[in-house]
Length: 179
Ligand SMILES: C[S@@+](CC[C@H](N)C(=O)[O-])C[C@H]1O[C@@H](n2cnc3c(N)ncnc32)[C@H](O)[C@@H]1O
Image (cartoon, protein in one colour):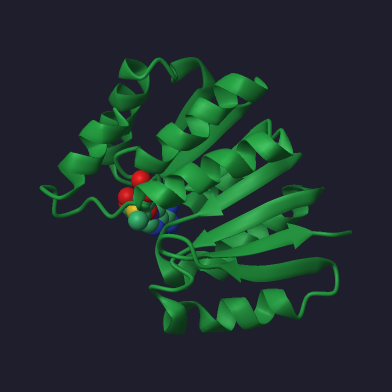
């Protein structure tokens, strides 16, 4: 499935997805932290979800992935089923601002990969539900540096967080909740 989606991305004009090397990093982050509850904002066709989902099979956890486009919701659901990941991935259809209010607390990792303007809104909804020691990873830290600059400035001044850029793939701003 990973090879197939990687190839398809080049042919779909609405398939923005993480590069494979970044997907592999996400997978390792989930495994090394033993993450059991992951929330992803921006499912698209499910490429990053495959890396999270494969990790959830190992940790016994669950990925909650959100997209507001019906076509992508249906397509990614099908992809996850074909990859044998249906039991560890819950697809949510809707605006992340609404869906996030319905998710329980105790999030280990949140991955924000949607419209860059909404990043701070998503952060504000996730932060109270993130466990201490949990992470918020925001995609496109290097590819969309100017669009994310206010967000990055904000998270780096938080007393109860540690935040740094990891320049792999599209670049991640990785924020860890310390208190
Ligand atoms: C860059 S793509 C996600 C790529 C995916 N994470 C991957 O690497 O395979 C961004 C997705 O975010 C979705 N999106 C943007 N704003 C959203 C919102 N407010 N709520 C839910 N989904 C949103 C778009 O429909 C799009 O599919």
